[in-house]
Structures are given as C-alpha cells and as structure tokens.
Amino acid sequence: MSVPSNPDPDPRTTSGLDTGGGVPPGETPPAEAGTSTATGPHRPLRRGWGRGPLIAIWALVVVCALFFLAYAIVLATG
Image (tube, rainbow, N blue to C red; front, side, top):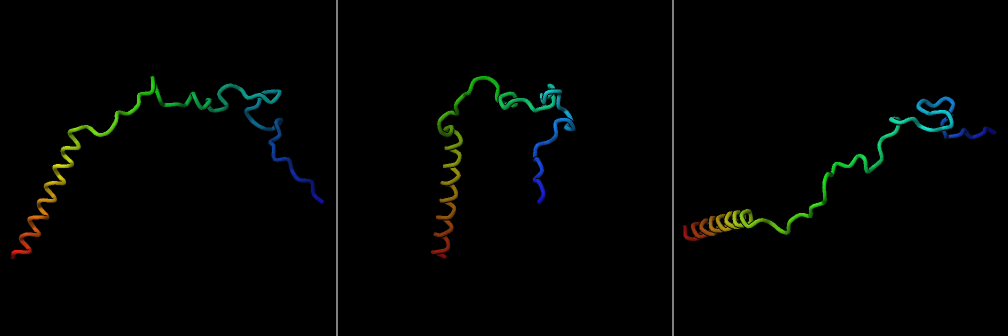
C-alpha cells in the first residue's frame, strides 16, 4: 500500500520563501485594491440619451419609412 504524497510544496526547496515560511516583498502580486484602475470619485452616468442623437435616429427612421411607402405606392400603381 502506498502512502499518498503531500500536495503542499516543501518550504526548504521552494524558491522565494524566507526562513520561517514568510514571503519577501515583491514575490506576491499587490492586493486587489492596489490594482484598481478607477481614479477619483464615482460619477454616475446621466439618464437617457441626448436630444441630438434621438432626433437623428428618428429622422432616419422617418426617411426610411417614407422611402418604403413611396416604393410600395409605385409598385401598386405600376
């Protein structure tokens, strides 16, 4: 019968460990908060779309609808 091996690394042969099992500075990544990309206070997004883009989208929708309406009238009368 075989004895299961220990999954933990041997601290005597593991690189980067100080005596007593500690880790020297620079061996581990920084804490989660230290890697954040956000700077400054949180600013919530504004509500909804601006008036200009909405007018442009609706104008495009109306032009397309008029085109297809005119196309349907031409096909029906032709």
